[in-house]
Image (tube, rainbow, N blue to C red):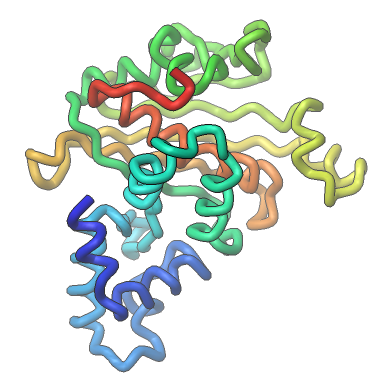
Length: 267
């Protein structure tokens, strides 16, 4: 947390975060354009932001693209807002929307967090329903997690598990988990009041996938690096992309809290 405060203290680094807030997934060249800084200076600032886990870099072919990672700021919110205002989810929602800004122009969602645990325990937390239901509030997936297996999904603590067409794509214990995502359901209609019924029905046809990559952190004391990539969306205006963007940050925070021995707000 101290690293995040130090990183945010520099106005040039805040400017880089603002640029990623406006358009996520930019290369070093794109981030350097129009700034009164050398590309080398920008690279050094990005290294500081990455060290504070406020920015993460993901390789796409030959390019290295940089993404805003608001998880550390979410943790600050949990410490100084959640403790005293646990019931005011609106405050957290507004903070998250402020951090993320407009929907990114690349149809994917990438977040990184560092957790003090082992790769094996983290993989178990992603696949063991008894653990999943704790940080997802009774929602979430259940499967035998073999490649090609059905992933059943439970919509709410009082709901039943359903086969919504999801399948396991990859499953490497301690390293990688990937599965197809469910489509928008009728219960999600109220989340999109601004769209017509025809637009919502069209949005319900979209399929996407989520991938969890697990690897040792660059610095051993940081534990394990978890990268979540949710992609396969039809367009940057995807309603599913909009929907999952409202949930992953809070889920990551709750997952990290549980694995590091704490309790979630719901508990």
